[in-house]
Every structure is written in C-alpha cells, then in structure tokens.
Length: 88
Image (cartoon, rainbow, N blue to C red; front, side, top):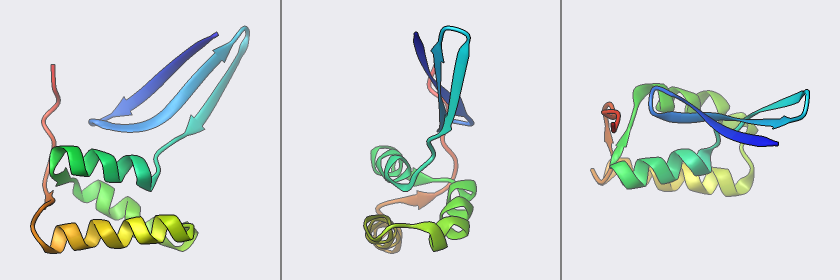
C-alpha cells in the first residue's frame, strides 16, 4: 500500500492511494489546505482565488468562516495575491 500527494504548480491537488491493484484518487483541494498554504507563504494565487469563488456555494459553515478569514487577511495586506516560487 502506498500513499502519494500530488502537487500541481505548488498546490496540493490530490491524494493517490495504492492498495494492490486498486488505485484510489481523491481530489483533496480544500479550503483548509489552501488557507494553511496561504498563511505559511503569505501568498494566494489568482487560480486559487478563482477556485474559492467558484466553490463557495458548496462550502460548509466552517469553510465559509475560513473564506471570510482569508478575505480579511487579504484586506489587511497580510496575504498577497501573486505566485509562489517552487522550492527545490
């Protein structure tokens, strides 16, 4: 059994679980991961902002509160809209 995190353009987008001949793919992009990534880097990309706005109707109450917190951090200038440089 193997577990791998799939990353695209510096953003975690999925988890792949291998169990024998069975491979399970789960889309794991969620607001919690995005929030933590934005807090740790101080940056949110425009693609991530688009993801947030397009998925708002499906957010739980906790995710709605997290999105509001993210917006407030953007308003205060603590998180910038930009791009992340990949770490080697």
